Image (cartoon, rainbow, N blue to C red; front, side):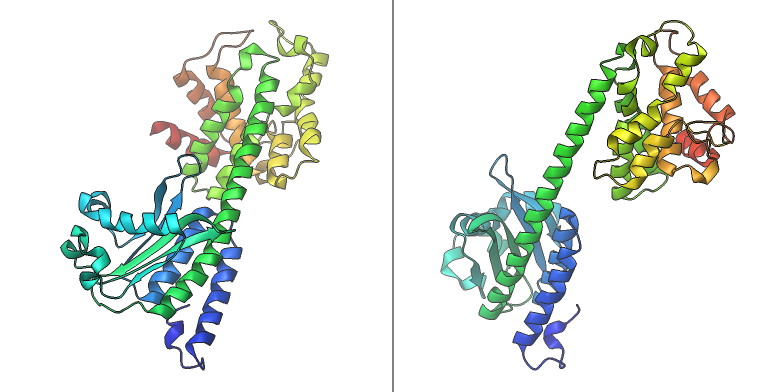
Length: 365
């Protein structure tokens, strides 16, 4: 998107603006990640406006206060300094009135005569615009320059307002998506807790397995999306136990062969429960295959190696580790060192050796 406003292929700045807004729209519509939306917009703004400094502030829905989300070329001392208050005064005014502020020569602008930071940092040009959704302010974009006065003009204000309008829609969509995801995750956790309530000895099991799994995922360099999927898979891995009789789950002694067969049904029951839900297929397969073994001697399908979904292979290690290190009705917990040795001993047979290696790295930190 570089230097669009200087591109001679465009007959006018207006055409360049339209093309820039189209490209930005394509970028923003391709992501529901809030940070990506903010960073993509800020990159575009700083490049096109040739601003020296800039930042995004969004209004916190809980507190109603403006909070800095993205800052570029603004050092921490400046942001936290009392001398930075004039910038906060400007953004507060823009947020309150929902109207942009433009000054091409801040040092001589009577509106900022009592501003210490304008003179302290020799800020020359300032442009601050609101982010509006249905005439409601959800935040502001602020940019300035200490190098040149007159760098921002009326046409820049109009362009930045257009960019802000696109960004506001993308930000609101990203926020709504995050809220939906968080609500969805809470429902899933509630379901997991309801299952664990059937067996007091497994209370907190899914939570701990999830914590361990995320550690391994981070060690393996998983993306944010992969970590989210792994988290959901780990929370739900034992959901099928809701279909297993409580007297079997809570039996203090050794299970009879027919009782063991009932336990072995829980991955398939879990898979059937979540199949109608709009979840990634990898999550559903992880619930189905978290009891598979790397050597093919697991259940329910007896698959081997990389045919087992990687999330399921991670959960298998975490599930076993937590089972060994937790008190169960039929035995007390094992020391962590003993459990780790058992995991190492079964690398290549019960467990994927690469996952075991990542597990050991994650737990050595």
